[in-house]
Length: 406
Image (tube, rainbow, N blue to C red; front, side, top):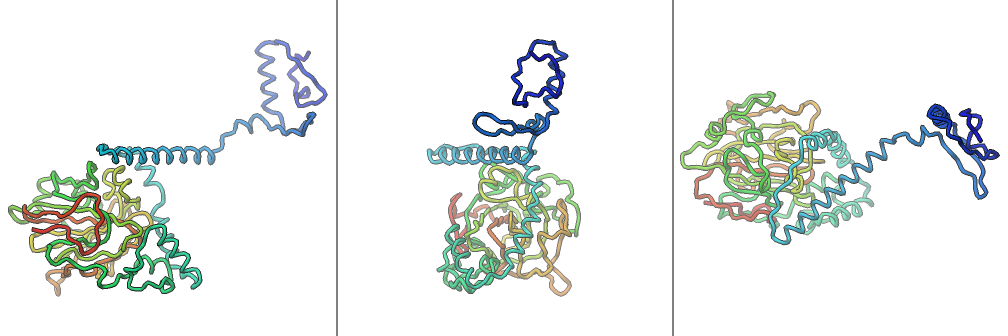
């Protein structure tokens, strides 16, 4: 019988067959303390050699496995929720959107997506060896369903790097421009939402809105200013709607990674101003648009504003993960996803000068700009009350097809 708490009488001693008496709480406490301080030892059994570690090692927390397990569990839960939503949609049931909490949005925004997008942009510029181009591009084509028969150059060896492949041009006859309708689709993509703007709130998808003024910014054009507090809804709307009897309309088009990445002028109009909002680069796929309220207001974007024959007209190119680069062909001063710009601000540039009193005229269908990968185009414009969209939410659309007309 052993009543001592001495470390020398360790249970790791193979020649000792201990049994313990009840010696009170003090003895038990001393014994547990000695067990805690035991070093790593090895002892022999009849079958094999067994290693033991200190109790401190056994109880030590390991952050990386816990983080991976927690993250994997959360991703699995989100995937299950999406699967359940798809099954309910197949049954014809309308599912109210479940919005992300503030902590979830803050956690997502803490991911260095801008830095990752810059790294992705540099990777896209790396010239691929001639023998590697076909397998790399073929994998991308297979993954995202790219139709290379529409490309101006179908030979995959022609594209020196991923950036050139993403920005490939189309054959002239691949996208005929509708001449019968006043507004056409500026790009290939999927219609997320469209309709009339009500209460200065715009729907990014059904049931999830964002503030019109937060998205476009104030109508006073000044350079490199922090975002000011919003004015009243009516006064801001009145600044946009310039003609009596007109209404504000909007249309949201999502460009998937496999879509044609260039965008064009949706109508005949004049661009007078550009506003660049540095911001996050969160994913803008339809699932994220249903989950994060005001997603487009969080992300980096370039707002082009001007006028068409019915009044105010704007086209906004919204950045996304790995799509930090937004290029406007006639704007050489624009540099997106640049570290010199901080989030929460904006910078303005006017195309109206002493020598050019109107701005940059754009013809319907004319090349306007491009993304490095899929993203989102948002149109917000003024039109008479009898303007009608010729769309269905969720439908696929191609550049040049009709969006609406009077």
